[in-house]
Length: 351
Image (tube, rainbow, N blue to C red; front, side, top):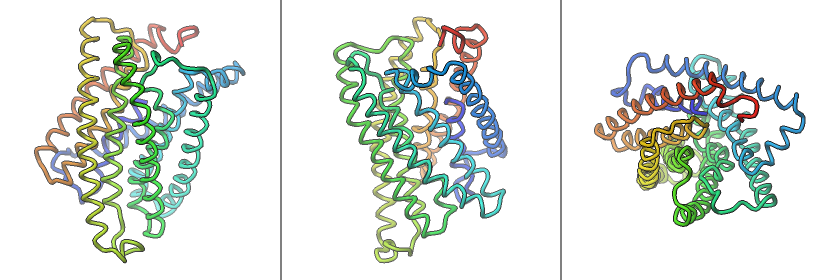
């Protein structure tokens, strides 16, 4: 998850019309390398987990219905969404017109699967075991994440589509983004209640507290990017020429509001995580990756807000955030690899 989401950092750099002040010449090359690495890693993991489920026929059902492990099934769809976005970013400029048409079809298939997944998985949680409030973590929101990222996917794909196809994609992106954020905001009061009553999560699970940061960040990115992709002079926007400018202005103000909410979540999560780190208890678990991909969304939101405001200061802040995220990604990746080699994770009876 951390690897495939890190590459979202490059999504804003490929449009030549955008500000290139805060980039270097090898930025796009790095993005393409990560894209290839994403695909290789994704396929490798698919093969590995397929072998697990084939050799242990009951493992798939047990995993999906487990009240904790089942929450991480959406990570498969999140990775798929990222690869689709990267195919649009790095592939369309190097291929013929067939790729945008193919990705347009894939977009609608992904939207249907992500929405059905969110409905079915939450129903399974509602109808299954009663989860105590004490066990509530931001991971309870993960089933809605794939639907939420339809907004980010729409904003990436839309610029390559003709106006008659672009409008439905943008509307679908806003619709699903709104669904994801609303479900998250409905669940977070339970999370606050859990923190007030039972205190902070277990030390090793505290990086998971960064998850809400991502939902605020990715929503801000999607709204700003979608508003920028609205085709002027077509359909509703032809009859209402002022709607394009109003939409961009509204998207920017909402993005700034969400950015600050993300900053609050980040600050609380950062203090909690640093407090744990000070204890020098560093047994790796997959929750560590939550210190990467949610903060990428928040960093991208900073970039988009800086571009819309044409603020060089905000863009320099986002550049610093990007460098820090790259460092965190490297540290988490190294810790993950070390845990695998030491057979502390991804090993029989250690799952």
